[in-house]
Image 1 (cartoon, helix red, strand yellow):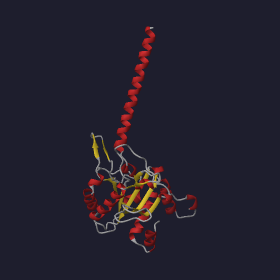
Image 2: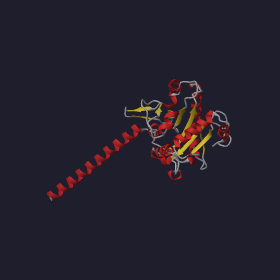
Image 3: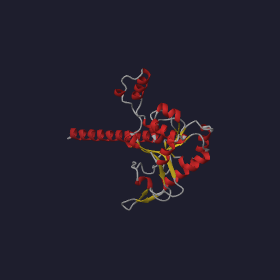
Image 4: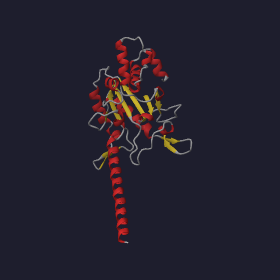
Length: 274
């Protein structure tokens, strides 16, 4: 954990404590039942429920907090205008190569949050020379993420977790925020089949209570621009594009099989004629 969050945590600061809660809710560590012999029945029941629940994302090593995302300067000495992610998750083995997480205790306005999202966009757009001398997005010089499809390469997704302890109504803030940041997240329609998000920032929101109860596998995540809640993997991905590609691949394979069958039929007819 980064120094600011660790220091704040020792003094009981609410934001740092919420960051810790979000890490645990996403990680969903499993208790070792063999170490709980002799514990009360309610403790054992809770532990068994945690073991049986869907797994979380990655391991504790998959999480970092208070990570600077410089729009200017360097990783070691970030300049002005950059973002600072409350949490960065890197769990490619669980389908989440890179995820930025921002925590709000319902104390900030939609305008302030929109300003933070502007900073995430500036960071996503920034390019630097890598060690091989080639220019790449700065975030790709630190983290591995699949290249994606040509013409459909979004920036790393941002998850906003709203913890209802502050005075603001998160539903009102989310609606305003979606409108204020529409240019950053809105995709381009592809023949009515799916949307492409080249150069866009996927923004996903959820509620801390729902996140703690259901974890990443629960359908408690709403991506801006989509009408229904999804699991985290679905929300940060593009399921309609995946379904479209799978359908087109199946159609292509069927045509190939038909073509081969036709060639075999023609060859058999020629043999019969000879």
